Amino acid sequence: MPPTESKILTTYLLLPSPLPSILPPKSFPALFPKSQQSSPQIQALYRDLLHQRALVVDAVAHNVAAEVKRGHTQKRLVARSRRQAEKGGELGDEEVEVEEVLFKSTANLPTPKPHTLFSIIPALEEATALVEDEIQRLDAEAEELLREIESTVGGLSDLRYGKLANGKLPEEVLGGLRRLEDSCKGS
Image (cartoon, rainbow, N blue to C red):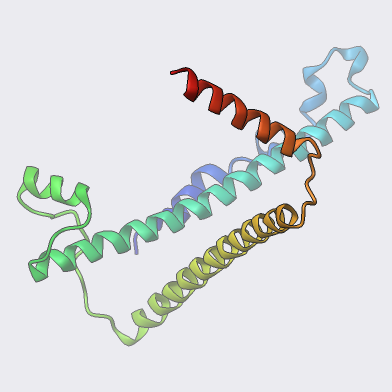
């Protein structure tokens, strides 16, 4: 079985990344002058660098996971486009259309294979995870929109009952309207 995108990215980006594999703790003091090598500050510096490097490795791991999700999404889009093309419908993905024009085929697109009992379960689990992620993203987006709407309604309620955060706002609005009226009369 060929290595997955996740396996490749993890193998080449994450495994050789921790600080001890790049610079062992025993070798670190040798980078400093002899008089400073036994200083406790050197060990503290190494621990700080170790922590910073761990944060970077965690960020890269998060980015790898996000890239794998994007890859799955792209694979679904290409498969959907291919199905549409097979049905004679319009292709939704411009890159696939360009490839078809240039190469007269979509040879590098995955060919649909019927699932077996053993292959359908991981595919369904992956699809379930993707749908759950999409639901979580949509829920978070809906909550954010609800907060914005509640904030807007609260602001409008304050306006309705005359409870303005800026007490000088009515005078400023009237002054702006007067200036607008004067500029309209002047032209």
